[in-house]
Image 1 (cartoon, rainbow, N blue to C red):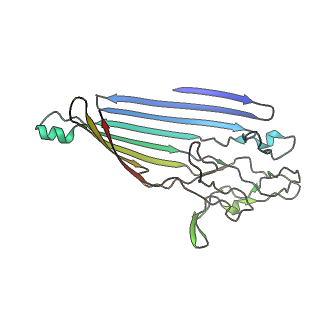
Image 2 (cartoon, rainbow, N blue to C red; image 1 turned 180 degrees about the vertical axis):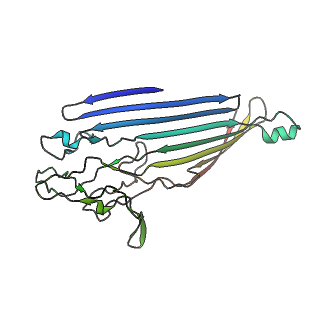
Image 3 (cartoon, rainbow, N blue to C red; image 1 turned 90 degrees about the horizontal axis):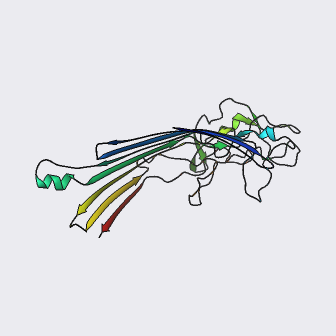
Length: 265
């Protein structure tokens, strides 16, 4: 178990991070290995890093603290559990040993909470010239009451309730905090099944089947796409002037099945 706290500061912004990591690993006899870890973290800042040429992210001039809120990558809960099981048949006939030995089963479960959503008005009602106005929150629950919507002839998923937000009146600032919303979480179940066939001392063949997201669970894209993924994952619309405000624009990969063979010599 580890615990950490980091403070970072530059000329314009301040961020604070705290994290608790718990990990359990156990080997059962010689054929089973179990690993589980959970991270409970909390990150708050008054600005989000947007590279060297990004525009201003603050909503009020000379008042950084007005934007104090969750970091854009603030994933509060992150859970992983994996198991590797190897078969070994010692009794019975030689044919039963050949049939049931040298199999390996490796399931992996991942679950994480959603990342922050920064809801913006899309208009400079505050007359500051920054264009980062946030609305007033009108309802305590900002989630859509009915997630099923229609985009013309195409069905869609409504994540945020547009009625939960009201644009800030002219010359005022909204009361909704920066990154105050929460996007969809992710749940994934992968599993791999393989078998090793030995021919001689030096030669063997591995036959393997992998199933990614075997439950075909829909994992919607929130405010940002994970680092390292390919392009094409449109993020959830968080601008109130958009006709698709609060709607899910993309989902990560559905169930994928993969079969392979590997020859060792």
